[in-house]
Figure 1: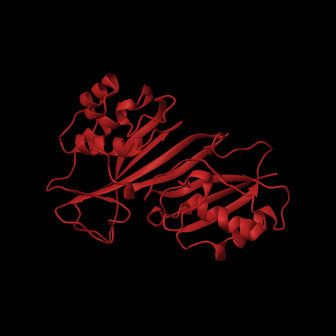
Figure 2: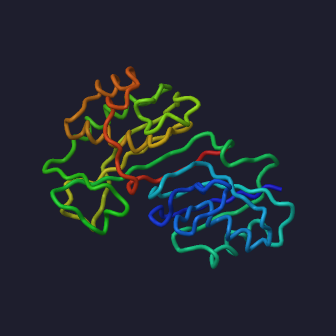
Length: 263
């Protein structure tokens, strides 16, 4: 049978989702979400063959608010809907499974996720707020980014395009064509940092994303807001497919996998 899990995690404590070592063994000095979850499930269900599959290979430092994972098991000694509760004492505080259930036959978290929404959070000002820096990107500026310019740049990414210019590493990409269904920036409220010039959230939904794609989109949109790029430059990057024509790669701590849409 297949069990489906929904989880949240703070990416600061993990070297990404996927176990990196050859052979699939976890390196204790480089913990991953997948490895941590495997260990807890194997202990709970007394089955050393369990291996979870994730809906996305989030990078080191990237967070998740709604992540889907699945695993196969021949039998359960804990009811599927109680696994989320039983896992709590076996997981670190930075990782929470908030729902568990039996999935339809043949379900696979990777291949049955049809859309994903990512959120990227950044804030602006002349000096940073250390309490925010672990979960958002500080953009040093004396003037607020132009929200209209950021949304004009973001709008150019909507549609089906070759996103080669927005990929950090093309080596493992079978195809660089992706469909972005929506991409926009809004101003957010954050009362604990009243001296900020502005706090912003970029939200992007697509059928899939290339390596570092959302972080490069975030860097590009911020450049547009600061007058370093224009919406026309975004169109040029899509046309040339050259990484140099897109913006910088924004740091990982501002990125959140916000929502997954299942088949």
